[in-house]
Length: 139
Image (cartoon, rainbow, N blue to C red; front, side):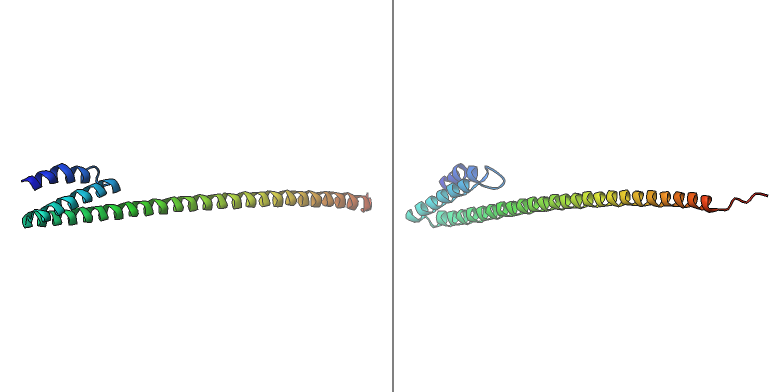
């Protein structure tokens, strides 16, 4: 009964602080379970020692799982950040290329208009020359 009371008073609040125990909570729970195990061994309480060994194994497993989950969350967060940065970089590159292509297209269009105007002037000049050089035939 004394062991169960210690378990409820010491371990559960430490492990129940969050869905995933903090390193501090894990340390406290591990320390408390280790102390209770040592006390049970010192008291030659085999049943109590077995229970505390089980509790200690549970604490270790939960804390390892919590650490792994935290590592996974950090890895996923880092991956998402890197992916977002890459997407932003790709978007910037795309927009830069698009601006450059738009500028090139504007230059080409301006050059085409100039060439078309020159051709039109040449045609008009040629028509004027042709009209001047045509013999005036009147009957």
